[in-house]
Amino acid sequence: MLDCLRNPDPDMNAVIRMHLRGKKAHILRQCKQWAAAKTPAHANYGLHELTNKTSNDLKRLVAELETELGNMNVESVTIE
Image 1 (tube, rainbow, N blue to C red):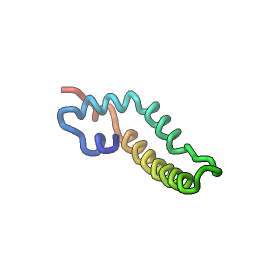
Image 2 (cartoon, one colour):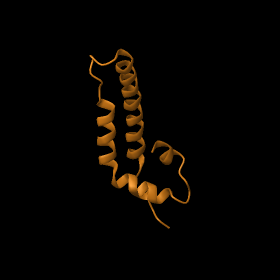
Image 3 (cartoon, helix red, strand yellow):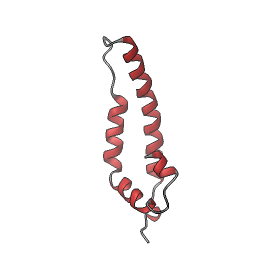
Image 4 (cartoon, rainbow, N blue to C red):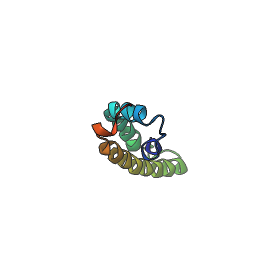
């Protein structure tokens, strides 16, 4: 999603932006749930550490996505 917002396909830009703007709340809610997911401490140590690292990476990416989606305005979503 970040790539679509940062490097839009000229032919699909308006459609993608309209879709993402309409689904913004749902997308962010789901991504934040994924980022908050934790592996139980009693799980395999390697899996636990990997999941926590992935969770931190996801939190960073969700923050970037939230910023990108927040930068979209009505004028940036027009169909010609």
